[in-house]
Image (cartoon, rainbow, N blue to C red):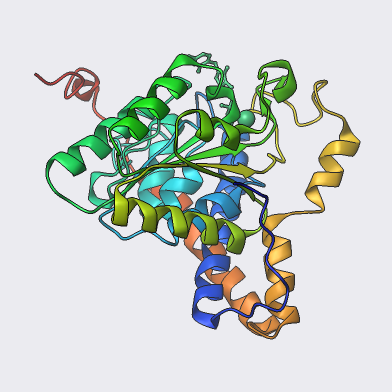
Length: 332
Ligand SMILES: Cc1ncc(C[n+]2csc(CCOP(=O)(O)OP(=O)(O)O)c2C)c(N)n1
Ligand SMILES: [Mg+2]
């Protein structure tokens, strides 16, 4: 049923779409590079998990959604939140822990949440948001809506019970949810083959009687294609899909994990960086004439400016007042 998709170079794409995809991937890349700098300067505390290298998955997948569709993610979620349309200024303020942050500065990097964009978080407990995605999809179905829920998670969630329970319920109850596993081959320092008996994650779909596919997660158009079909299936048949997007994180697990860690070799990291999704897409657009060098430079500058603005906004935002510490923490 599944294969890894690669698009033929002959498929030319629309310039407007190319601009949108490249802009979003560059925005995410630049946002996170600056976040890493701000972390080193002590402006950002707590944990910070960078998505650098994986941008094509979030951008390709979200590009087929409607604004009223939902997205839910784990803690490596800056890219998913930006792709869903959240304001980079309020996101950076959240990373800084300031009052203008998306979660009023109380959540930080791992707990971005944006109700206005139907972005349902930012969840730090590995695997815990998979049942939440099924629940949101159940609510849509119950209310007779035609939205879908897109749920991103890592390969580290697959050995957990929540993954299997969620797949079973989503398929049994025909819920409109697309599960996108971002398989970057590591869960912190644990390589996938040390944690999973079946490392081809898309194959679990067969067990639960749902559609499953693997895709080259470094190819933004291939991701768009696969997720596009899954979303259509959701809307038409309210049937879920499991997608395995094969990708790689270029940085350490978090800012506290040096990139040159012992669990993967320098050669491996360098080899994977040659398939940088942004570079691949940029080269493709230039080669087939979809975009010009000047257009690409303009996009790069626009995204740099947006991120500069986000950093300045975050830095100028005040600390949350002490009373906020206990407000809105628990609601009956
Ligand atoms: C239930 C639970 N167990 C352990 C952890 C500690 N932990 C944080 S991230 C992580 C690895 C998850 O890897 P993966 O799901 O592949 O995501 P990636 O970091 O590769 O994006 C672990 C074990 C946690 N947050 N939650
Ligand atoms: Mg992983």
